[in-house]
Length: 99
Image (cartoon, rainbow, N blue to C red):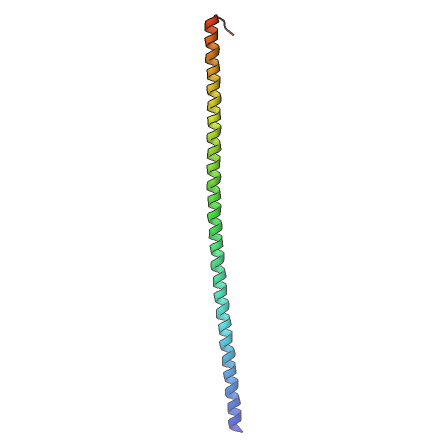
């Protein structure tokens, strides 16, 4: 009788140990999963940061190009005006007229 009781107690202890091991394993898995998620999140953040930086650079480059284009257009207009003025001055000289 006593032996049976002891056996049952041992079995209970073993079961408890198994349960404890299972719980520990679950906890470990959860921790690993959590770490993995955190890593993924960090990676995503880094990617987003890089993308934002690229976008900023692209935007800056685009703005520079636009400014350059505007400058070129202004120069062209100035050149046209100067040519026109030169032409009018030449005509005035030829005809001896002032406007």
